[in-house]
Length: 297
Image (cartoon, rainbow, N blue to C red; front, side, top):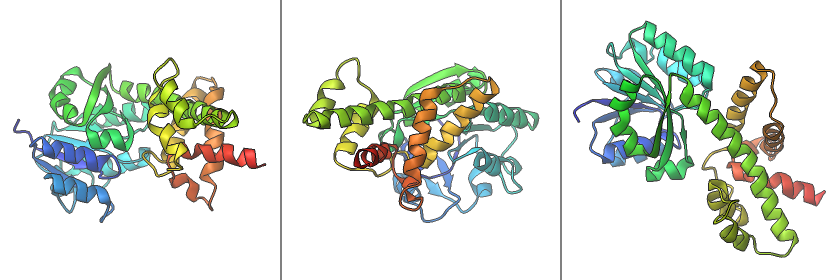
């Protein structure tokens, strides 16, 4: 394939994703807002060309990937004075991997269409492990023809790639995914504490339970991290709290509530405030610190 690619956002996830595209031999210019981040080196070593500006990255690009943080970050790199739309060629396809919520994706898609650009919302799941190994789940909303055009690139970064329908539907599914992630973390922490109270090795519990009906990605991948006190972020608490804010906004609009999500959100906020607010930088598995605190009390 001879299409030119651009990748904007080389953070914990984006650096590995750009690297996987480069490893497949695709021509890719990459740019990150913050210099000297590990993801820049990861992408560069894999063969991506690191460039000094959005302008250099997206000029003449056929497909432009973005992987940043919250809604304002996505709008900033796309629409600001020195943003993507000021330098990308007409008809370019912009694919956003960020988690920004259903309505924001639809609004951005509408704005881009009015300015003669195409758009796919393509939020991802699988954490830094999935990004590194190229096994992400990618949930995609937008025109089917754009999805088909982008599919070979998605295959370089993900294992499960699902077309979810019209613009915003990828985000809609991702919101459900984040609700599950949050509530799964409660179940995981409580199962570990229950094993400890019964003098059962938590490693044994994880080994057995992950093979049955109680099995989950969180149990298999984050359970061992909790047991070994590895709270380094594959996906930081601050990012899940941002996603849960989007979930709560969706539910508020429909005048509905999700008590389990609210409980998980409250627990995560307690941990986020620990260590003078530095707790928010730890991985979501650090929810166990809430339970440890409760037991100490």
